[in-house]
Image 1 (cartoon, helix red, strand yellow):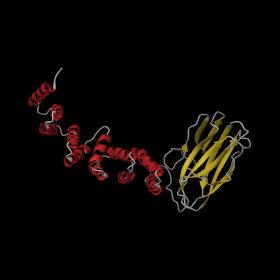
Image 2 (tube, one colour):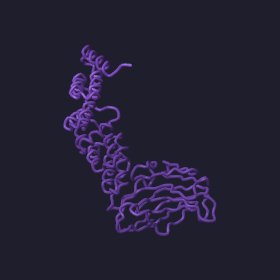
Image 3 (cartoon, rainbow, N blue to C red):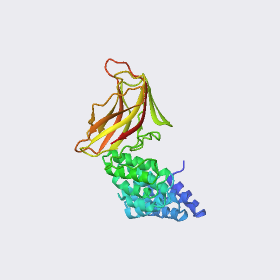
Image 4 (cartoon, rainbow, N blue to C red):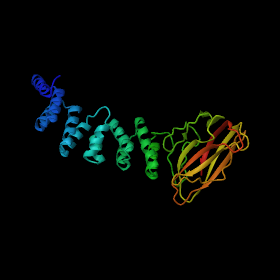
Length: 341
């Protein structure tokens, strides 16, 4: 078995024979560092960076200086690493935030790398650094591309989950206005805050669009022509479940009408299907005497609700709940032209 001294001797000979062997220089640096020869380690790492101006030597130097608590040098080499990072950049982002908890350090270094900006937004979103993520989102929103949409909408959803409704609306509206997503912007003052109410497109489960919750025994099928949803219950579904939901911004202390067209097949009286409207802030159901769904021919019905003094966001929910004394529902529901005013 080769010991540390012999390994160091072999590597020393290797770099004499080939001074541009950056891997050998980095291995020599690691051996020197393990032996507490920090001057030798730094010299070897720097030689590796001179021999190879790509990512790995710069990343190695940044980590070395971080371990030595030389934060200025570590930051300088981290910025250099950012400019040519490849693969998963999350470990480099983590190091940068340990060095300097400032989004600008990374943002300025990778402003020319849209792929890295996307990953940076995902990193900040996952780490609940939502305020820091705003500057990255703004950079991507200047000219959003298809590949940007998943991370931008995920950021929008995290904003909603943390109660930041206005910034989430702003992100969503910019995506709509720049045609990155095929929906109309939301306008609170005009009460135009329901997304995809006509079901022109399948529910995407993105931020303010409809979400279909998967349950055994329930199938939700989108129809393009005519636009609508068909919800089929097999009789094997849970006794109580939310099938379809959407987050909707609202004005406080305001009365709303949720109107929808529907028809059913196989629904008896007390079928157990209805709309609820939950205030996201406190979970209360705001719906007033929600009408049961059930009509063989197309029929327009409505659910009324009034928001509270602190209401900013509600969750529309189509709910099935087996009524006492009845069997599990087996039948189909068609929905179209849902409006909120």
